[in-house]
Length: 148
Image 1 (cartoon, rainbow, N blue to C red):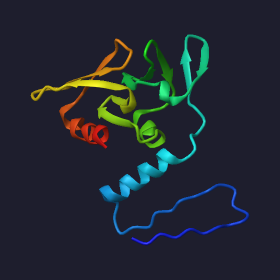
Image 2: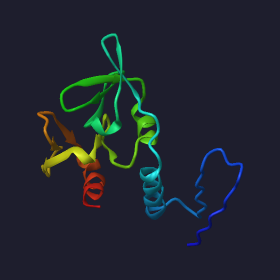
Image 3: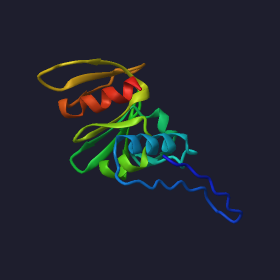
Image 4: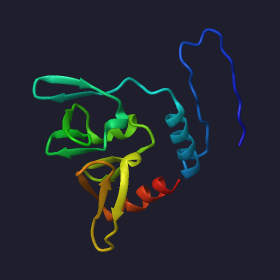
């Protein structure tokens, strides 16, 4: 693999371009690492009742979609958010991992996973009573993220 840095004086924003023959797991890891190290984008807007809330993404335990509504869960509360799950997957840093058809979890808040070989496994969080299930299909991806 070759690497090259070009310094451009009139550049408005830093940009990293990855040129590759194919997108494999190694390239995906490099992309996630770059996204994790990049300066944080402005926080998302969260809604509850008639108020808008602004707080850092690291406060989020998980995102959950129920019907047509997306919720962001903190340790003590839940807020509506105006994004679809697939849009969040593209926007969120690498610590956020898809765990089912309707959930994305922040791996930095996971305390334990109660493994169940025949069905979904139960995720418990630090300093919260909330729990969520990871489907068998997504368990391996989550486990890899937690180990690394």
